[in-house]
Each structure stands twice: as structure tokens, then as C-alpha cells.
Length: 389
Image 1 (cartoon, rainbow, N blue to C red):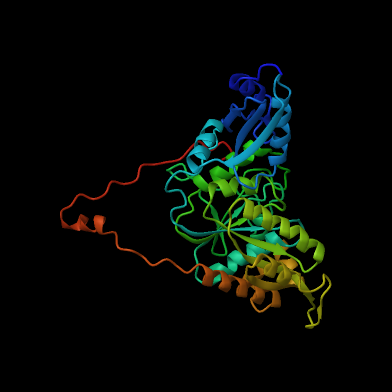
Image 2 (cartoon, rainbow, N blue to C red):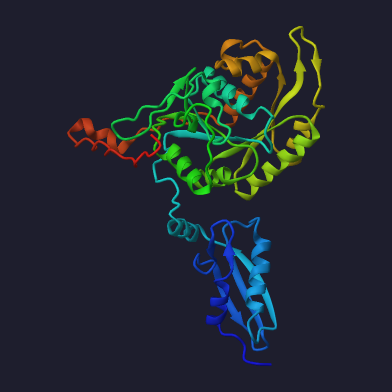
């Protein structure tokens, strides 16, 4: 047997192993935790992943074994994995130019709820728009971020069209308001109904800007309408909003339920707690009060039981629900007695019970300003350039 490869040779060989998502070598990304070379030609390589459930772990397993195994003197390669610490993840984000939200961003937002689904066509955006309006009707201060970048529809459902939001003197985007809800969407910055053809880096920048550079103010609830499926947007929001929770929308249909389960798996891999399941289109309720289970029955309950989370509500499909979504006025505002509106308001009350209002706390350190103590300095204007504004 010839000489065993050195650590330097192995490290150079690992430069050929590319992270398919970040498009850089695992050596450049400093993901190679350790290299151990045994006298018998056995090499142990430990690779650090960003998450324990990394979906491309198998890619690294195979690529590392091939790259190191091709070196002279290497008889066998063991590939091990661990997870980057919080400090290491932060350093990686800085190297990539992907920083999280600064301290204080969204400090006045009490609760962040991401509304997602495994597939499109289950009524997720309609539910989000009506749920926000229902929370506002209950006296909550509510905002909606339309993060469904490719299929944005919240502006139309609130009758806002492609109105351009103003910018404050502090260089913050001021969200538009309708029906007591603050609204922000990529639809405000493109021609109405224009297609958005963006990939990962631009999506990350836009979503960061919507969270960091929008003047949300004090909110009890911020609802984020996610695109269907498991992609860049969800991963970006999990990185920026580790305190957020996830609500899964599904229909009773077994096919939709199985796909929604994948969205739940994504939330678990990203360490987003699941607030519960909402079953939409549970039945079709006719104007005369008849009910037809056209998509089956019990799918939402089965998914909630499987995930061990609450079933937040079952919302019937009614003709007014669709009509008001197209008309720009949420059904819960226009016709609160409609069966679908009543069910959505029930979900809203359930969310309020899960996220009670925080009690105000006296800031003792600043309360002496009226006794001759110097007043606190006014906050300096903050913000970043707004290319899309």
C-alpha cells in the first residue's frame, strides 16, 4: 500500500464538492469540520450541515466519498455529519451576504403566523385575507405580508390593485391599509398582474426588505401568506423569523392532505412550530343551506391528529366567499353571517386564544424623564435603499 493522502491533499480534493444550493465549495463555506487520516488508509470526514434534516445530506455523503476515495492510498472513506452552531450559521450568512433581521426589527409585532399549504388551489390566500380581517374585527392590530411572490393575490382581495405605497421620511415603506389591515405585497411594485420571474437571491432580498424596511408599527398579529410548496421563500422566512409559527391549510381530500403533510415536514425541518391545521372547503354550502362533501370528509382532522396539533377550524365553501375575494372586500367584513365567514371568525378567535395580548410594562428607566432627568434621544432615521420602491 502506498503513502496515505495528507490532510492538505484531502482538503484540496474536497474543494470539488459543491453545495448545490449555495453554489460554493464546502471548503470555501467552512463546512468541513474535521479530517482524520488513519494509517490503514481509512479517512474520516465530518461535514457540518445547516440543519439536522438537511434534504441534500445524501448528495454530500456521495460526493465526499467519491472525491476523497479517488486519492492515492485511500482505502475507505467514512462520512459523518453534525450541525453548525448558531454562531457558525451567522458567520456563514455574513460570508454569503445573507444577514438576518437586525435587532429591533419587528420588535412591535406580537405574533407572526405563516400560512402555508403543500399545494396550490386549496384557498390559502383567500383564508389569509379573511382571517386577517376577522382578527381586525376582534380588535386586533393586524398586518398581512403577501409572500406568495409568484402568485400574489392579496392586493386584489383587498381592492388595492397595484397602488404604490408611500415612503416615510425615515426611508421606510408605509404599508397600505384596507378594512383595518396593513398590507404589503410585491404586487404593489410591479405592473398589475405582471409575472415575477425571480430566483433565490432576489427573493431573499425582497423578503428581507418587506420585513426590515416596512413601517409595520405596533401589531398584535402579522400574517404571512406563503407560496404553496416547500421552496426558497419558506426557508428564507424561517431564517429571518425563527419565532414565527406555521398554520397549514388543506382540503378534506386525501391527496391534498398527503401533500400538506410535506409542508408540515418542511416546518419541522426549519424548526417552525405548527400552530394548527385549517380545513378549507370542508363542504359546499348552498344558498338554501344544503351541504355537500364534494372533497370528502375528515382530512383536516386526520392531519391534525397525525401532527398532534389543534384543528383550528373547518371552513365551508360558499359562493359569496369566492365572489367577495374577486370583488376586493373580505367576506367577513361584508357578510359576517355567511357560514364561511362564521367559520373563519371561529378560527380567528382560536388564534387569539393561542396568542393572548401582552400586558404593557412600565419602563422604569425612562419614567424619570419628567423629574429633571434628560429625555431619551429620539431614534435616528434608519433604513436601506429601496430599489423596488
